[in-house]
Image 1 (cartoon, helix red, strand yellow):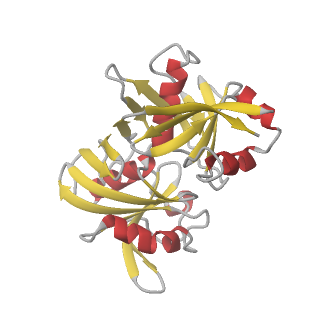
Image 2 (cartoon, helix red, strand yellow):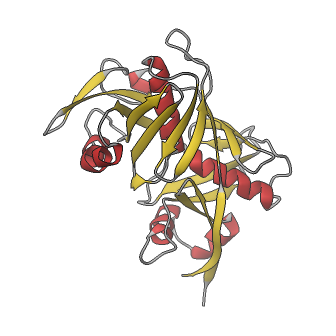
Length: 282
């Protein structure tokens, strides 16, 4: 009986299967097909995404990764996945240092294992130019998109992957469930988009619910938290250090950028925890 060994991890409830490349080769499947199979919550191990280390990356980074959403699509970057990936590599001695670089579709990302177990990730610089998000609108901030039922004003931002951040006083989860899928596939986003619904609590705290591209409703989204705080700062709604409350837990986002100077990376800090290890029967 052929099996592959995997590790299941989660960051604020955003869960991932991590699979060594040697184990992946045993499957004799395309990565996208294996992602759909393993991430299925009824017939697989169940997860929002699949991560496979790439030890042969040709970049200047210490290591790379292959990242797939549960529907088999790829994502340029995932903040919660990166925290789990970094902790896994460090604990398994794949990487000997507590701060290192990872090649992703969003460029080189730098995670750091903190002394108390959380992981801080130096994310990319936010992208606001519509053509690079990519977004079909004329501007990225305070722009409107039309749905069948309503018109939303939001902020299109890329954190290596596209996001549309909407500020609301209503229940953020209800909004995500009702409108997330339609906004994700809106024609103004040629590569689809993640959708964030944000309620401002104070200058240093927000509530956030996310409809994640390729996954649907998730308990957390690291890049979504980053994009939401960047949008909050640029709209003068939050300060530079913000606690983001997600359905699965809280993360901290720091960004020193401003409307006049956005050329700063975003820092994401939060937990990364093991769920279980197992053997999947092929």
